[in-house]
Structures are given as C-alpha cells and as structure tokens.
Length: 93
Image 1 (tube, helix red, strand yellow):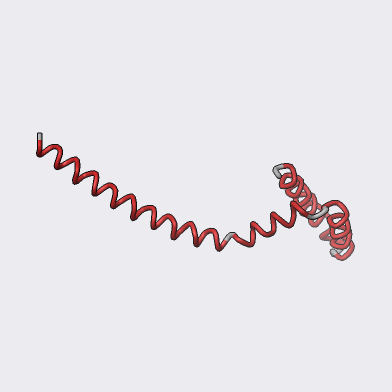
Image 2 (tube, rainbow, N blue to C red):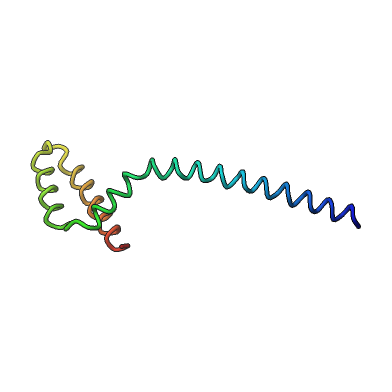
C-alpha cells in the first residue's frame, strides 16, 4: 500500500508542476494576444460611446459622393454592412 501512496504522491507532484508550466505558458500567450488586440478594444469602445447616426450618415454620404459611378453599388453594400455591424455592437453594450 505504501508503494501506491508514493506513486500517487509523485504523480500529484508531477501534475502540479506541469499545470504550473501550462499556466505560465498560457499567461505568456494571453498577454501577447491582449497586446495585439488592444486596438480592437479601443475601436469598439469608441464606437459604443460615439453618437453614431449623424457621423455615419455624413461619412456614408461623402463616400458615396466620392466613389466612382461604377462602384457606387459596391460601396453602398459595404456601408450597409458597416451600419448593420455598428448596430450589432451598440445592441450588445
């Protein structure tokens, strides 16, 4: 029975060391990911806090006026998709 207890104690120590190493590695990768996505957080915060409708309408009108005639339908679709995305972001806050 002592051999079984010793085996379990060693196994537990091994698992504790492995889990500490995995936590350290996850923290390292999590920090890198957090740094690389920081600009996304800033953009989402800006979108949630800014008054959307007047600014979006003005920007959309400028884009459509400046777009070449043959690409206005393409830009209209992009603007519509952007508007839907912004509404989705606003509804989740």
